[in-house]
Each structure stands twice: as structure tokens, then as C-alpha cells.
Length: 177
Image (cartoon, rainbow, N blue to C red; front, side):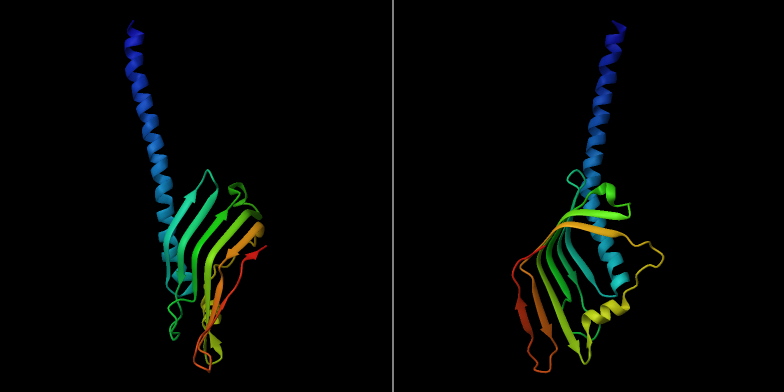
């Protein structure tokens, strides 16, 4: 009789703790996307030396996927175009178990509406300057990357700063590798 009387409150407490743990895990998963977004916006400019903005990041650990929406990379000083790279969305499916190994496996990468702006200033381009001023940490081992499917939809390239004065835009078709 006493055991039954004690069992009910103990079970209620255990159920309450499990529900709290589930809420914490769900909350962390939701916050993880925001943390990664802020990390990209803070660390990206330190590496590329240009402004970087991201509209949203969504991470699904059960689905082993990462989606970044509205990625914008600015231009170096002296270039007029508002962005050097814009991507509407990037979705990456990853085998999480491989992220710490020598070969990272990405079964699928989908890139939607990427727009690259190549702008000339004399003999220099915005993209060449970004590459030149990139600060990439030294001493890291190189990893191999195995991609199952790469699909790029609605890509475009704009070339600006040409002697003729008018930008040239190329809309490309689907790229499927």
C-alpha cells in the first residue's frame, strides 16, 4: 500500500523530467540554426574580409541536413556591386558520422538561385581580391569530400565594370552532376 502511494508521485516526477528533457532538446535544435547563422555572419567576414549575411539557417540532426537561406557575400572596398555572391538557398545532406573522418560524405547538395557577380576594376576583379585577402587557418589536415549529387538550379553570372560600361548577365540552365 505504501509502495503504491510513493510510486505515483515518483512516476509523475519522472514523466515530468522526461517531458522537460524533450523540450530542452527541441529548444536546442531550434537554437542551433540561429547559433550557426550568427557564427557565419561573425566568422565569415573575418575570413573573407567582406560583409556576409544569412537570412536563415535550418539544421535537422535526425535528417542529417543543413539548409541556409538567403546567403549574401558583399564586395571588397572599391567595387560597386552590392554583392559578389548571392545564393537563394543551399541544402546539404551529410553523413554526420563522416564529419570527423578523412573523407566527408555528402549524399546531396542542392543550390538554388546562385548569382555570382564578377566585377572588374582595371586588371583586378572583386573575386580575385576576396581570394587574395582570405585568411584561412593553417595547419589543418586536408579532407576528401565525396558528393553523391550536386544540383544547381537557376544559376546566373553577371560581369560588371567592363570598358563598355554596361553589365552583362548570363542566366544558365540547370546544372546536375
